[in-house]
Amino acid sequence: MRSTSIQDGPHRTFVLILDRGEEASKTITDFANREGIDGASVTAIGAFSEAKVGWFDLAAKKYKPTAVNEQCEVLSLMGDVAQGEDGKASLHLHAVLGLQDGSVKGGHFLSGSVQPTLEVTITETAGHLRRKMRADLGIALINI
Image 1: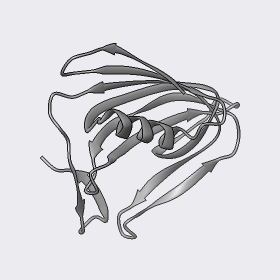
Image 2: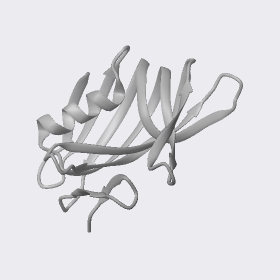
Image 3: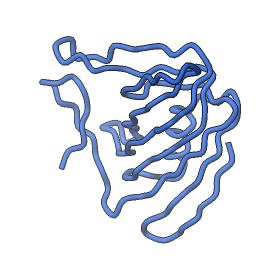
Image 4: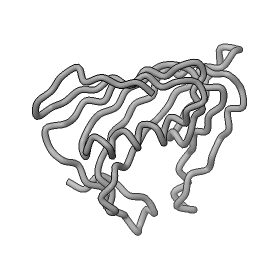
């Protein structure tokens, strides 16, 4: 992964270029932790050799994964970074993935193996964002 800061100051903006074989969620999370990012919006485009998206089953209080076991275009990957209850960066991303036949799969982004690249823009927000576990839902949401 290569990165650069394209805007410094109180609202930093970073561009990350992920390389083949990197796991996108881990790489972005590690970068956010290293840079102390605790409130940001995230957008990305590129491609994966395989990925997993999920649909949240409210009754079961967990994500039901859908595997995409083929090369796919990242048509849209967007979401946010907030600070989790453990003090570390917590990503919440959704993805729309384009398949070879022109169909799409999408949902909550769980994982993706980059191939050949993923271009990510992270723009810090003015305020710090914190996630708090919602026992009634079984997931951590931004607490405002």
